[in-house]
Each structure stands twice: as C-alpha cells, then as structure tokens.
Image (cartoon, rainbow, N blue to C red; front, side, top):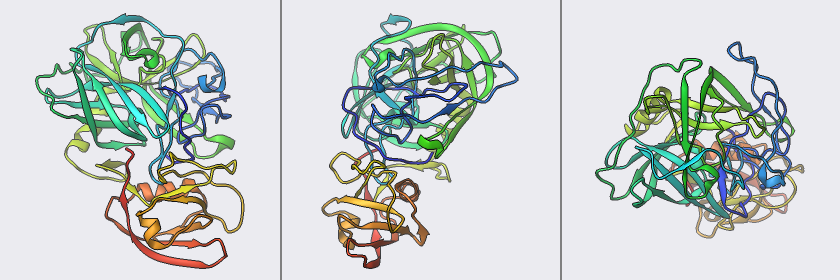
Length: 410
C-alpha cells in the first residue's frame, strides 16, 4: 500500500477501515491525514454475489458519530518508510455486540503510537505466542502490548508483515502454554452463521456480534485524498455482523466456533457491512513471514529509516518529532519530498541533508512526493546502502550514499 503523510493521533485510537459501495466522505485515509481531516473516497465494486448498494461513511475523528467500523485507512504518525497506524481511528463511543470475558485463541492488542494510542485484536496461532493480526493494527507503533484471555499481559514484537494484504505476525515475549485458535480453512458459504469477536470500540473488552455470510470473494478499494493512491483488498468474506472499531485483527467464527476469517473492514453506516480476510489466505502469508522469506510484499523484521521529517500537503509537518515522519509533500520547485526536520545521528544527518532540503531521488529512482519517498524507503532494510539525491535550501544539488538506520516504529 502506498504511503502518505501521517499525523500524530491526538486521542486513543481504534482501528477501522471504512469501505462503502460509494464515495465516502470524512474518511481517514491509510497513510492518511490527521483524524479530523477531510477524507478520501472508498469504493467497493458491485459484486455478482451480493449486488450491494451504496452507503456513506464518516470518520469519528471528523466529528461524526460513525458507529461500526473495523479498520480504517487512518493513522497516528510515521517514518519515511514508516508511517503510522494506517487505519487507526479514535475510540468509538458506541460498541457492538455482547461483552465476553474471553474467546479461545483471541487476544486484545494495544499499541503506543508516536502521537497517541491504538487498539485492535489478534488470533493466537501457537502456544508460545505467535499471533496473527491485521497489519494496520500495529503499523506505526513503537510499543505493542497484548492481553490474553487469562488476563496475562505480554510485550510483543512484529516478526513481519504484508502491508498490501494487511497481514502481520507478532511474537509475544515470554509466552507459553497459550490457548490457540481453532481454524477452518474451508471456503465460506453464503448464508452460513458467523460470529465476529474483537476489542469492540477499542476499550479493553472483548465483544461478540453475530450475523451471516452475505458475500464471498469480495473486493474493496480505498482511494486517497483527491483520488490519489488507491489500494485494494480482494477475496474477502462479507458479513452483516456488526463489526466496529477495535474488531480489526479479530476472529470471524463459524457455527462450530472455528476461525474462518480475520475481521478487517466495515462500513460506517448502519446496517453495517463487514469484511474479513479468509483465514486460509491469512495463514498462508503468516507461514511465509514465519519462515523469514522476503518478497515484493512481505517484509521481515524492522523497517529501514532515512531519518527525515517531511512536509505535509497542507504545509505542516508529519511525524512524532523523532524525525521519522514522512508526508505527501506539496507543490513547489524542485519536485520531490520537502524536508522540515532531520533526526540527529540518522542516515540523512550523516549525509548532510538539512531542513529546507528537497529529496529528489533514492537509489537513482525519482522521488516526486513524500508518498514516493516512503515507498522507496519501505522497500529497503536497515543496513542497506542507498544513494540519496537532494537539493538544499540554497538550490545546490547533492548526491551521497548512506547506510539506512532502523526505524523506531513498526
């Protein structure tokens, strides 16, 4: 998924993606803007399986009462290649379903972001603490805490992730004897009864909400502000279970209590339409991550960082103050990513990049915006050597080879 400006979230955030069958307004975009910013459009193509109708969506951060949302392309803050919780939103005032003490193999995930907090859910794959969740639940986090059904609390690290397919694998520190989830990798069938389980509202309590499978092999597309940078998730299970913020990464269970999907998205209008990644697809990606196999979409371990803070589209700055933010950039000459801050001791600082510079190329590839800069850095790993080309505040052009550092953000 492409990267854009990430502002610090000012409040407790609960992950939520807001797909609709029509253009959505006041929707917090992935890689997005501040929680109160105007939003991008989200489109769910009409499907032969359901012929769903359009519905509007609003972000809670935009002042709406948006009820049930399960991941939204919004976030906290980010790093050049490290953006923030790409779908996090403020905690919802409304919850959905019935509170429950626990659900076998389901855990709650709380994150610390550069400018706020996030909340979501995860599914336990191994007794020693391998947890499957949505990538957007942990994106941009600096700390991850996991609360198990027995109320034990663990610190967690990101083993790896596939941003494009919204999957991440976590490893809990010091975990043993955990209850694992029972999985059903069979194809979902229209009309089957299902129950969604997750940290509804991001408020530290598990909820469950029931419904049926209303569609299979569905596709949703989120499009950035002004129609830029669209991203798609495909092959999804559609359900009328009333999923809300915080359910992201949680379990969609069949009538036997087995996991058939990961709660990943929902409309903000009522009645809610929810979406889940089939567990067969999710575990296939998880197995690749656990094997340590890198690919064009699978990233293993920590992110690389150049160490620059980039100007926002509105002329402000992105990031947490750590100097690892990046943004979409704005008009001006030369074209590129406008630097408004540099982290002391970072790769950028060692190269001589300073505030007021404009980064125009990475590894010989042109940088036309901060979005492009983020994508190029995100394809690298800590320790990689890359050439950086920039124009300083006085108009002088420079190129230097730098060794990328490690981002403090997941």
